[in-house]
Image (tube, rainbow, N blue to C red; front, side):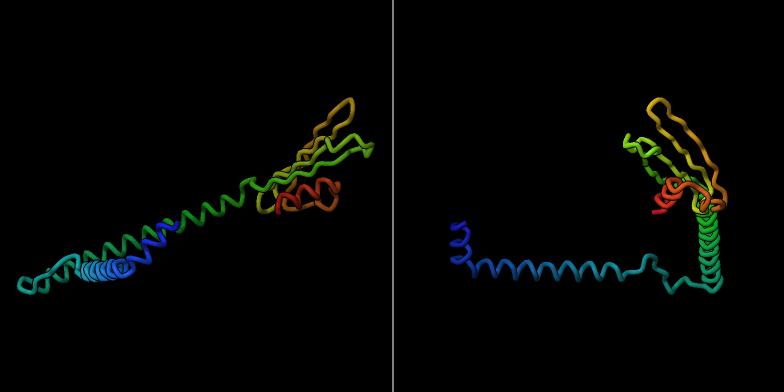
Length: 162
């Protein structure tokens, strides 16, 4: 580190000249790139321009623009249809673990809510007991009867939309 400090302090005028040279070189490169971006892609000479060829060229460009516009409309329509379909998929999943009998056996029971964006889907519930395990399913349609569900199922639905 000492060597670097000594080098910079003894050669600071040379370093300044090198930095100034690099800055000037950078401005030259930027100016060159700027002039290159201003050049037209296609040159039209004024010697051989007639009104019919110019009109034909404008019509061709107009047709290309129209086809691009129609294509973008079809892509937007497909994207809208896809977004509607995505809302129907079962993509909201929530789980709630609980102790079914409150006897201190642990949170081995669970409710899993699998729903779409409109709260349509189903709940899978597993009730664990020391000697048996039972599995139940409950369909959910249009957000109906959610208030009548057990609190564990309601919590699973809430967790699905967090």
